[in-house]
Structures are given as C-alpha cells and as structure tokens.
Amino acid sequence: MKSLHHDEDGFTGLEAAIVLIAFVVVAAVFSYVVLGAGFFTTQKAQESVHTAVGQATSAVELSGPVMVQAGAGNTVSNASFYLQLAAGGASVDVSKIGYTVSTSKKVVTIQGTDPQVIVVWLKTTSPGNLLEPREMVLIDLDLAAMGFLEADMTVNDKINIEVKPPVGSSLPISRNLPAALNDDIWYEVY
Image 1 (cartoon, rainbow, N blue to C red):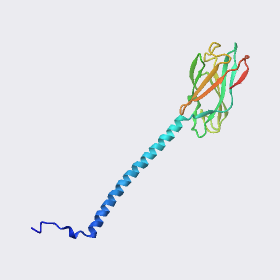
Image 2 (image 1 turned 90 degrees about the vertical axis):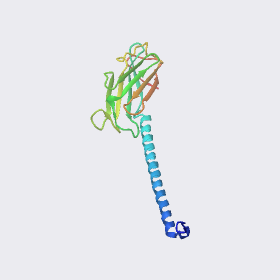
Image 3 (image 1 turned 45 degrees about the horizontal axis):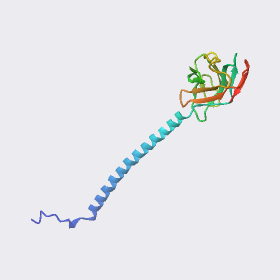
Image 4 (image 1 turned 180 degrees about the vertical axis):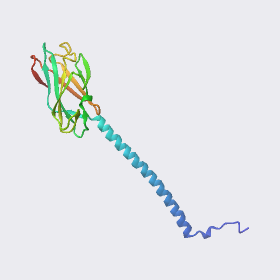
C-alpha cells in the first residue's frame, strides 16, 4: 500500500528550475504577443493621423491678392487669385480642381477644365497640369460667363470662392466687393 502513496519529499531543485523556466517561456511568449499587438496598433494609429492631417488641410493656398474686374452696370466680370502648394503638400492636378462661387443670391460650381476657368502659369518647374513645389498659378474665373448678373452680384456684396482640390480640404476665399465699380477696372478685394 505504501507504494501507491506518493511522497513529495523528493522534489528537487532541478524540478523547480524546470517549472520556473516553463513560466518564464510562457511569460515571454505572452509579452511578445502583447508588444506585437501594441506596435501594430501604434502603427495603424500613426497612419490614421497622417491620413487625417492630409485630408483636413488644404493642398493649395492663396499666394497674393484676390482681384476682381468690374463689368458693365456695377457687376463683376472676373475674379482672379494666385495659388501655390501648401507647405509640405503633394502635387495637385490643376485641371481637377473645382471652384464654387457664391453670393447671397446665387451659387455656381465649375471644374478646372471648364472654359470659365482661365489658368496662367507664372512660375513653373515642369510641363503639364501638376502644381508642384515652388510653382505658382493664376486662376481667373470668368464670372460673367458663369451667369453672374447685377442682380446676383453688385457693389458691397460678399463673394465666396471655394477652391476644391482633388485631395485635401477646400480652400475658402471670402471677400467683400467695393462700394463703387467702374467698368473694366481691377480692384483688390479684402
């Protein structure tokens, strides 16, 4: 009967070391899995932040004044402004930029390929439609061709131009027209 009874008096240091090593190995594998998941989560969070920043900021910015040309009968025939890439921005295809011009009475949206958009390259480093670093482009919107009449836009009105690049948020431009307009005179608006 005594042979069926197990006595644990013989538990040795070698057995204790084997048990300790097993615990250490299990803990190491668990910590490796936890750290790997943490690094993966951190990388995904970093990618999300970079993507959000790229989409929240505009890819283009104003460079210089906003000008309007007076038309007949206290109307505005053209609006012009300069665009360049925002700091750290990626190249933008100027032909894919959209424009929304609005007043309190009318809203018109056009694309960069429409005939009402006149693009003049002032500084260019390479041919093509891509606006790249150190380049500047003059955008001239033909408001008369877009259908803005005196009833839609006249003296003292507020004009809003929203520049919508294909990537990133839009660039809002909001200006007040002067108190008087003389035919074919260019005015800098604020």
